[in-house]
Structures are given as C-alpha cells and as structure tokens.
Length: 137
Image 1: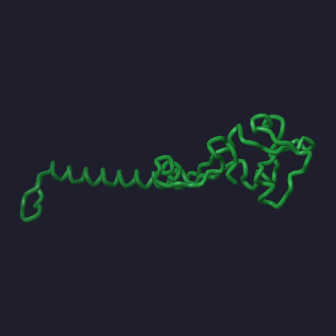
Image 2 (image 1 turned 90 degrees about the vertical axis):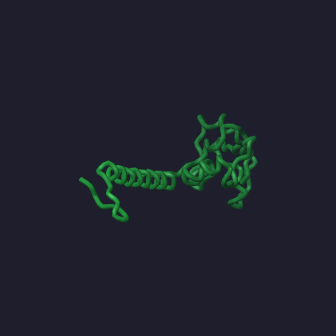
Image 3 (image 1 turned 135 degrees about the vertical axis):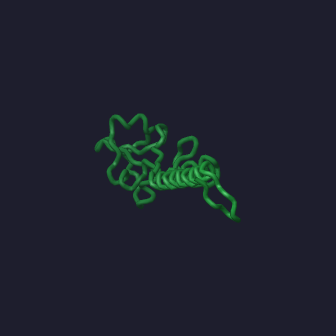
C-alpha cells in the first residue's frame, strides 16, 4: 500500500511506520517528562537536625528544645535547663511537643526537584544549621 505524500510523492508503508513510531516515541517522551515533573514537585524533602547540634534540656520533664525556640517565642531559658548535644539526649529525652510542632528539629527543603537544583548550585536557600551543626535560626 502506498500513500500520496507532500507534493504528490509516494510514501511507502515503511515510511508511514517510521512516522508513527516517531509520534509514539514523542508521546512517550512527553509522558515521561510530565511524570517527572509531577514527582519532582509532588514529593517533599526535609533535613533532620544533625546529631551534634546543641539542644536545651529540661531534665525534670525529660524533654529537649532547639535553642532558637526560646528567642523566637520571647522566652528566657530557665537556669535549671542545660545545654547538651542532640545525640546524647535523643534516646533519653523526647523533643518538646510545641518546639517539634513549630518545625525546629527538621528543615523543610521543598520539593524533590528543588533539592536537586540546590545540589547543582542552580538555586540557593538558607540552611537551618551551619556546617559545624550550629544553629542559623
């Protein structure tokens, strides 16, 4: 079977199959790109508090706080609270519920796509912890 093509040229069956194949692969490529976009924007990422970050500990209540929690909420750190390293207290104490609910122990880093763009250096964002695990805010 032959089909009359542009300017009266005859296109054979094998040429029609190649054209259809290109359409299929184009549709497949478009579908893959769309799926990656949905996944890239649909999956959130986060970074947990580093194990050597400083925390404030209430030994009476057996809870720990992020140091910025007090300043951000206009609170004064009680004198009987002590400072410690997170890895030393995580097994013996629980994070303070209010401090945890306000997101002090995890940094939301946005969609999965943003994470990769940050790693590539295309976009930048402020980090909650410095390289030495000290708190930025």
